[in-house]
Length: 251
Image (cartoon, rainbow, N blue to C red; front, side, top):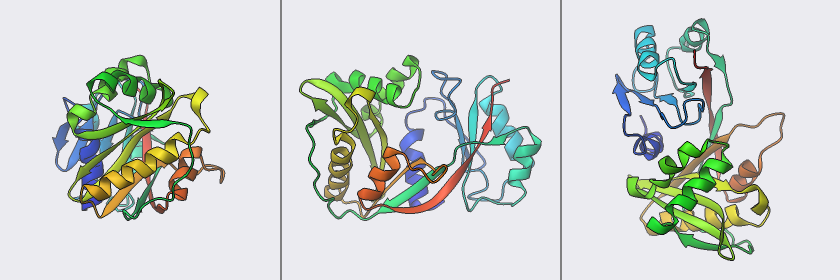
């Protein structure tokens, strides 16, 4: 597993109290949101070594049939039969995630009416609430996202006056800055918050000794990028590859 993929996985693995490693595969199960495949994921299948049907079945068994999950399939995953094995088990292609990378050169400043503040203990619940709301996750996810800073993330809020409006974080390891948790409350969109948060996190990664920054968001659909996709490209990121997500609904 290469450095950037390894750090991207570590960024989320640290949030799970019961993550399981199984033959190079990581099973991430969040009991706080059993219906959300975004946070219930099987990652790394066929990356470090070719997958087998036995490994796939074991990983699905550890995840359990009572949650809806994604099985992530990286472009380099092997063998080629892996996608057929997933289909044979009733999984269907879901919404893939495009990965992006850039260097740590500064981002051109863009105007915003919002003010950025680091997330500490006092701001953690607001951070978790914005992340859960922005991604359409249940309120039970708020404490899970709120502990990001305790798990090794550096996080910020964007405030409209004194009102929390947007959130984002960066996880730093091995000279890689992984950007995640970018979310904005609907009533505060189009105020430049995420552009400012992108610039802040890239500068923080540079100051922390990183030489590369990576992130991801949902792949293009019908040639219409999301606001997040456009913001990432504006910040100088280059598209790398789509990681497919195969969906398995709860039984």
